[in-house]
Amino acid sequence: MILVLFIGMVYWSTSSTDQTFKTSQLVNIDNVNAINFHDLDSVLVAASALYKADEIKILFQGEQYRAAWATPIKAPVLFLDTLFGGVTITKEGGGKQTHSLKLETKEGVELTLRGINKDPKPLIPEFVKTLGLENIIVDGISAQHPYSAILAAELANKSAIINTKPKVVFLPKQPLLGDYNNKYGNRLFLLEYETESKTNWTNLSNVSEIVDTKNLQELKLSNTNNIFIDKSALIRARLFDLLVGDWDRHTKQWGWAVQQTDQIYTAIPIAGDRDNAFINLEGIIPSILSNENVVEQLRPFDYEIDFMPGLVYPFDQYFLLNTDESLFIQEAKQLQLLLNDEALLKALKVWPSQILDIDGEEIISKIKTRRDNLVSYAKLFKTTIDKKGLVTQRLKGSEDLNLPEQLQACFECYTKY
Image 1 (cartoon, rainbow, N blue to C red):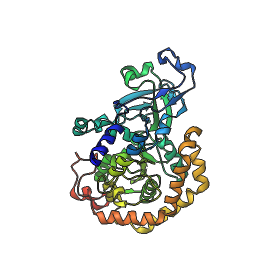
Image 2: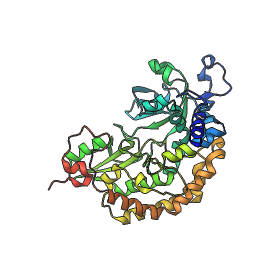
Image 3: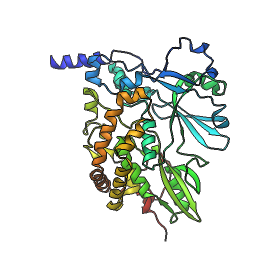
Image 4: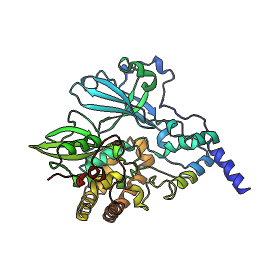
């Protein structure tokens, strides 16, 4: 009877909607087609009303960030023909749940529009559909904060970490969208720089190109003994991930700004895609899924880090294996100084006041606790990387590269004398 009751309540919690995707909701606009958005600098818009929940749904699937998704904010209106003097759409992108458009300026700087509203349909397994439990996957998006990326970016600025400078924008339907109007028009997006670009958009000097890890490996093949990773910058960026609870840091989430001085190349990491920073996994079902014995890498953003192996990726082993512990300690202490209480509170102001009032205090409180323990976490992070050892499979995104065995195992393993 207990089992039947439990199953019944699970199905109750998934019954609030059968929708799998819903775009942003404009406020005080009844007929969007009657609006000339050229007359408006901004609009009042809520990210999504898809995650409304009753008490049973909250019990089983968690409170998460439902209030932030449903709260209207003021977002600037974006037209592609005036952005940076006019941009062109180069292609459609996106991962398994994010709709995105790749853009390019007249100067060759590459940008992306990443949908804030997620489409989890590709993530839903057939057996889940058969059982009629799709809403568990759909509702899981409410654990992601709709505006996590802009707060993470501001915190990264204060940490002297390169980031993609995301901004929240509203993209109305417009001629330059062409065939993309129906899919992308009248939606909220993050406008940010790309982690690959032919033209340097960072503040760094002598940057020859911004590449992904696959292209960096190819560069290593042709410049074997003359290319180096800025390990201090990478360690700081990865410890920053621990601070903001960004658990989804596989290889394709990273780019590299390649500085060239004479014949020496130095690659500096650029983190992209901050959808999972501050992820809030509450409720019976998310708590089960985030158990270390169920989904090891789905780590919640809590006051403490309780399972470091789930936060260490092959990416870390590939670039940081056997790195001196002193570098980890040094960068942890530097982050503690840079992200003091005053800096954290100032960074929080990047959020609209409505969102700050809902989630700001708890998020900053968790970061403070993690920051205070960061040296211990840094040591454990280093120890866990070394314990996992050499990479045994090709990195994500590099599966089709024919690399020497040593270069598949770790970046520094491949040398020529």
